[in-house]
Image (tube, rainbow, N blue to C red; front, side, top):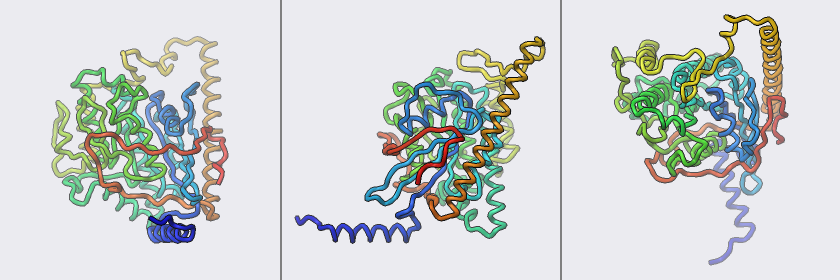
Length: 414
């Protein structure tokens, strides 16, 4: 067995580089991807992001407005770096207009969205899912319409890729309406959710699967407590972020439909027939898009029979979390004045964060326009041989560098 010399190694590397160029993949230049994380407040979004970046979970502060971090890893043989931009939207559904700061014409082709939901607060789940999925869909459709008017090939490519994630022969292809970019519904606080009654867990799981299937989203349950989830599911949250940010296959590739276990549902693995219906549902889905207003309202009405919507939210254990709006019924001059002052300070902070986020987005667009960075080409969902049932989850290496920062942070070094 003869050891290859340096010239043979160089020739093989050049052949590999030419192959990547033929496939449209980045070679020597850095590639970029963007992940927007939005969802229930105080659900653990920052914690799961820090795990992906291998950052300490100590002294985590509530996310205000829009916060920015990034992860970076080097490719072998000095072939450039892969950079993932992580944007975390705070405030639950109160600042969804900031989605437009992240989702732009320049970033749409390389952006994924993670909708994080607090499984321990099922009364708030429908509103969170509905509001965020609708906001993302509206923003994506607006961008694609603008790009279509400019005769860009991007809209057609993204829509084709979104439908391909289901598979060409999927039985529900005529009734689903997938969002044109990758979306994952991430269920957090599973360790608390598993203490609900079996019938309640089943209802929550059906609703999540229904909304995900209609929108072309994958589903993954996660817990910070590793002893709360089976061995095969440990590390899947980190694997999901790695694949969304750096590629390597679909973000979720295990399959688990059992409501007594953490859900793992890749896009296209589910179906209307397998999901079934909620108890008490009136009407039929036959022949209708399952994302249509009538079908969604039918599911909503049935779900709210089990979990009436809560205006203020109820944490696990039944303790109501007041947002303070009811204080107007019991006026106190000094307290009310301080409340107004704090509200004004919060609004000023949000406006400042919006400006900083817009400035950062503009700098990134300028850098992309100058040719310094190439966006990562979106990959199909069937990479890696498709979903697997059971077994140990595949693990991906963490980014070699990951630094956290607020929206005022500078763009990552090139």
